Length: 151
Image (cartoon, rainbow, N blue to C red; front, side):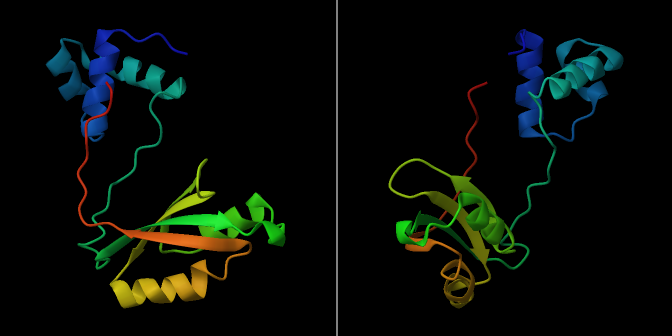
C-alpha cells in the first residue's frame, strides 16, 4: 500500500473526474510545478493507484440505445471451467463488462444493444449458447449517473 498525502488525494480526485488534464494545469491548481506534478502522477501510476486511462464512450450516441445487466448462474451439471465461460463471453462484442461475483449469480454482464429486438438476438444466439450458461436474469438500465468516489 502506497502512502498518500493530501496533494496525492487531490490529484487522484481530479484525474478521476477528468483524466485528460495536463500536469501543468493540475500543478497550477494545487501549487506544484509541472515536473513535480508529473513525478507524483508517475509515482501513482507505477504503484498501481492510477490504472489505464480509457475513454468513456456514449453508447447511445453510437447507436446502442439499450443497456442490460445480466445475472448468469452457471449450470453445475455442465462442469464447464470458469476460464472456458469467461473466454467465450469475452468474445461477444456486445458484452462490455464481465464480473465474476459472489451471491445469487456467478457472473454479472453489462450488455449493450441497438434496441430490444437486437438485445433478444444477442441473448438467444450468443449469451444462452455460452458453455455452462444456466439461469439468466436481465435488468434493463433506465438511467445512469456517475457518483463521486470515496476520495
